[in-house]
Structure formats: structure tokens, C-alpha cells
Amino acid sequence: MSKNLTLLALSLVGYSYAFSQEVTNNKTLTLKDTTNLNEVIINQNRLQIPFSKQTRNIQIITQEDIKRLPAKSVNELLAYINGVDIRQRGPFGSQADVTIDGGSFEQTLILLNGAKISDPQTAHHSLNLPIPTDAIERIEIIKGPASRIYGINSLTGAINIVTKTVSENLISAQAYTGTSFKNSEDTQNGKYYGKGFQLGFTHKIAQFSQQLYLGHEDSNGQRYNTASKSNKIYYQGAYAPDSLNNISTSFGYIDNQFGANGYYAAPGDKESYELVKTAFATIQSKHKLSNALTISPRISNRYNEDDYRYFRHDLSKARSQHYNNAFMAELNATYEQNYGSFGLGVESRFENINSSNIGKHSRENYGAYVEFKTEMIKNLFINVGTYLNYNSDYNWQVFPGIDLGYDINNHWKLIFNAGSSQRIPSFTDLYLNQRPANIGNSSLQAERAKQVEGAIKYTSGNVIAQAGYFYRTINDFIDWTRNLNTEPWQPQNMDNNEVQGFNVNFRININPQNSITKYYAVIGYSYLNPRIKNNTTENNLSKYTIESLRNQANLNFTISHRDWSFTTANRFNERLSYKSYFISDVRLARQIDKLNLYVDAQNLFNVKYIEAGAVPMPGTWYSLGAKYTIAY
Image (cartoon, rainbow, N blue to C red; front, side):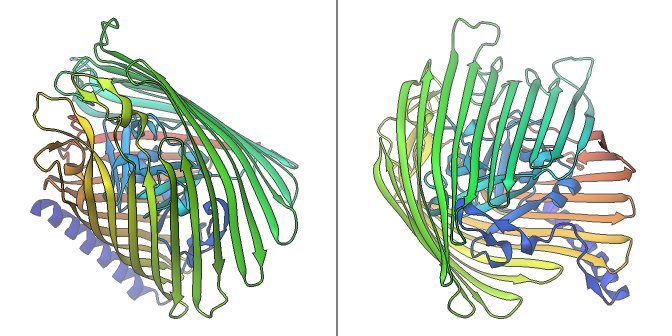
């Protein structure tokens, strides 16, 4: 651990020195980035709030970040964000869980342009997404209870992927390949490798715009039975007949297959294999009916197939086949007045599953919300509201909340927010019958959380900084436990989960006026202190909670000069079990007219670590990629 902290400290010192030298040599510093974060609008489904006025702990991965970071997927991008814990069971996005601020992976809601796309069977599949990074405008990470904004299952936060608005006609082709230069256990005499390609098309004519992406990835697997392959398609279209009305639609599909050796039930699952197919579609519109009233109806559907084969060479036994569907309809509205703005609406969600070892189940969920924001009081921003929810299995719940922001001056702001939220157990939590490995618990109660947070925020032309503290309690917290290694894992309600957390984040953009050399950094640190109070299962083994993060530090630094750029992305994670690791990734890129070339080196120091299950992550991994884009 001390070695890892030393490496991170040396990196910080080195980069701080580079910054100080640049400030010394250039008296005037201005921001020259294509993304002005303070002007980004966080929609939150109904009320549009600029990032500079936000009173929540929201972090954003911008389009510029996506270009800089040594990442090719949403999973990899999220791994570089402080307070977010990505636990992958293999590279190339074969499967990954995501948690926010010490919660469980079931407590984070995933959205695409505000539409919920989380999986009702199990959150293991919520990040099974076909959305390429080329299609993403930004990723919003909303920390803390978000039920007042998005309804149930956003207990510790939500991740909203916002796609680009097409503005030009482009065709792009991208190919990449990578290797560890070590032998794969599956091929014996071959090197462990992975490769992928992507074709993209964007088109805009008059009021119509559309974008289409096709992609493929495959790997031969670093270990025995961990080969993977996936095929993806994503389409988005929009029609805006005038400035008052627009309609858009999107469709995505991914066919993902991978060897699941060690994923769920090691060491007995050495021959397991999994096939996951996910499709989703949305259609939504926005209509400004008057200067005061705007309405936004939306319908969406997500379908998922999960075929888990415990013995990949013998499908006659220990095979689990799951088919689930979630259909959602909603109506969001805003009403603007000179004294403030109202957001209100209703939504409904219908979930069902037909499974070989979960059974056939369905449930309904209905929600209604209202919120109000105002700046009538000088220097004070107030956003207050509540969400009323009915679930056919868990009856009525109310989620009130309030956000406050006080402007000390043009740069400094004090923030306070308080809210509540709920997480409905998944179908797997309730009904799974996968003996001898895992069984569900139909008596589970829903998790209920309350959280308060205070922070101070600083913004200027080239620095955005925030430091905050939060306290969260979760009643009936759910964890998978067992008394003995010979027993199956089963979810149980623990009495009370308490988490205290501290976090600090900096975004620094140093671009000297008229300089051809620019510097950019994101620095973050978070500390979590969780505990189970009045734990009735204290002596049981825990499947997930013992591996939550305690200390986390991130440092991403980019220097660009003319057509060249170099990025180093570093993260230190220490878990509650005191297991820790320091991972350093780098990217060197060059733009040559319409061709972008890049070389990545991930896990530069060849660290041995495990994020989830019994799956050791790859050591040092080298990638080479090229992307060619032409306008037509």
C-alpha cells in the first residue's frame, strides 16, 4: 500500500511542478477548451439547471475527456471517476458492476438520455450497452439519493449517458488491437490478444438528423475459458420541424458472449459460459406549448436475454435461461413563472421475467413527482420537491428532498442537500433458485435510504473544485451472505447500513493564451467509512460489502502540443478488506488530418489485482488504434 501511495504522490508532485512552471512563465491564463463545463445543462428529466448552478454532487465526463482518456467503452471511462467503483470480471466489457459512494451495484440507476435502462433481473447486466463512445456527448454521474429526480432504484446515485446531437455529415471507421505479449491459457502457444472495429455514420439534412454505429470486439482470453466476443448496433434519429417541437428515437442491440470462469461460483464454475443479448428502444418528443409550458412525453422498452451455462459442453444440466422485459411510459413537464419554475409529471413501468430458475413473475410501478426551483432570494438557489411511488409488490413510498445553494461571491458557493430513496429487490434477489451456488429470498424488504450532504464549490475560468461530506443511512440493507462455505449464498436484509464519506475533486485547465501547448488535469480523492449497525447477520460471510472502497484517489493529466497529446490516467483503490492496488494507464495520440492514431498502455506497472468474483485482471496491456473520419 505504501508503495502505491508513493507512486501516486510522486505523480502528483511531478504534475504540480509542471503546472507551476507554466504559471510562472505565462502571466495570463485562459480557458481554451471546446467544452465549457459551467454552461452544460443538466436536464434531470424536466428542470434544466446549468452545471454552474448545481447544488448536487455531480461529476461529468465531457466529450473532451472521452477523447483524452485511454478508454474505449463506458465501463473504462467510469473507472477514472472519483467516487465510482467499477468492478470488471474481464476486459472488453464482458461484464462489469458499477457502484457509487460505497453502495451496492444494485443501488445505481443507469439511464440513456434520461430513459431508464437498468436491468430488472440483475444489475450485473445494466452496463451491457451497445453505445459507442463516439456517440456520447457526456456522461453525468449524479451522486446521492436521486429518487426525487428519477424514482426508485437510484438509491446511491444515477449515471445518465447523454448522446450527441448531429450537426454534420460524417463517415468514420475505427480499428484497434491489443495484447499483453503473454501466452493465453486457452491457446497455449498463442499470445493473449483482443481486437475490435467500428463503423459510424452521421447525417443531417434540413430538419432531419440521424446517426448509426456498428461494432465488433473479440478476445481469446487471458485465462482458461475467458474468451469473449460481442456485436453491437446503435441508431438514433431526430426530427425538429420548428424551434418549438422536436421528436427523437433511438435503438440499440448488443450480443455479448464470454467464458465465465470464476465469475460467480469459483472454483466450480471453471467450464461456465454466458450469453447476454440486450435490446432497447425509445421514442420521445418535446413541445413548447407556450412561453410558460413545455411537455415531454416518452415511451421506452428494454429487453434482455441471459443464457448462463454452468457446463458449457453439457447443456442438459445446470443451465439458466432468463428472459426479461421492462416497458416504460412517462410524461414530463415544466411550467415557468417569473418567481420560479415547476417540474412535474407521471410515469409507469411494467417489468416481467420468464426464467428457468427464477420463474415467471411480473410487477408494476407508478410514480408522480413535483418540484420547484427559485432564485427569488438574492444569492440563494432553492430546489425542493417530492416523488410519490406505488409498486405492486411494495405499496406506497414518498421521497421528499431539498437542494440549497448559496453564492458567497462569483466564485464560491455553499451547497446543502437532503433526500430519501428506495431500492426494490431485483428478480434475482427475490426468486433465484440456483442451488448449490445461490438462492433468492422472497421475504426481502425494499431498501430505504436517507442522506444529507454539505459541500463548498469553487468555479473560475480554468478551475472547478468541490469538497464535501455526506452521511447516509440505509434501512433493510440487502447483502448476499452465508454462514458456511458449504451453504448457498442468499440475500438478507441487514438492520442498518451507515456510511460517512468525504470527497474532494478538481478540474484544472491551463491553456496559456495563444500557446500551442496546453495542460489539463482532473484530481479526486474520496474516503468512505461504512458500518452495519445492529447487524443480525454479523457472523456471516459477505459476498459484496467487504470489498467496498475505503480510500480512492484519481489523477488524470493531459498535455497536448500541436497535433500530439499525451495522457496519463492513474487510480488508487483501497477496499474495506485493506486490499489495495494502484493502476496507471497512458495514451499517446496524434491527429494527422482526418486520421487519428493512438497507442495505449494499461496497467503500466503490471499490478496483480481482482475487482470482482475470482477473476484476476490482466497485467500490462498494449493497444494500437486508428480512426479515420471524412465529411461528405
